[in-house]
Length: 166
Image 1 (tube, helix red, strand yellow):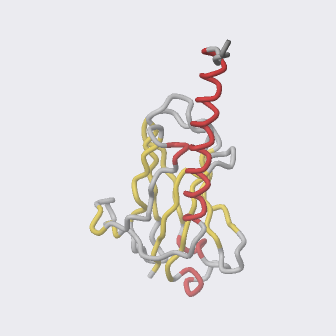
Image 2: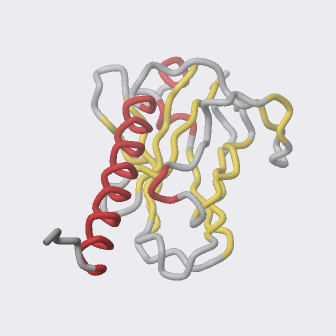
């Protein structure tokens, strides 16, 4: 007599397989994120996209369908402008806060902004002072192409993108 899997066992295996695929997709996304910055999505001071970099501001596999990322604006930015990134939250209680980090030339990370409460459906804003993109907060160190990362407060990457400071 042949033995067949029960429905609960089959569903468990199916869920485990889907979970592994999603974890692999997230890991691949994060590996892409940690490469050197290259190009940027050009935006106006009002947030209108002028030129798209296909690698910027994608939503990670873990947050697809829950978060849409509006590219950083203005981009490029002057050292005396505030840069804004909008997170459009579409899921209820789906994102446990958010923080934005920059990787500095010495490969350390610096927090640029943080939202410490669970993000409600709608728009949540993160802000960047361009001077904080440099290792010593000087205009000279801040200038150039910088990669920034957005995480939830559980340490899961939501998105990443490049910002040009002139």
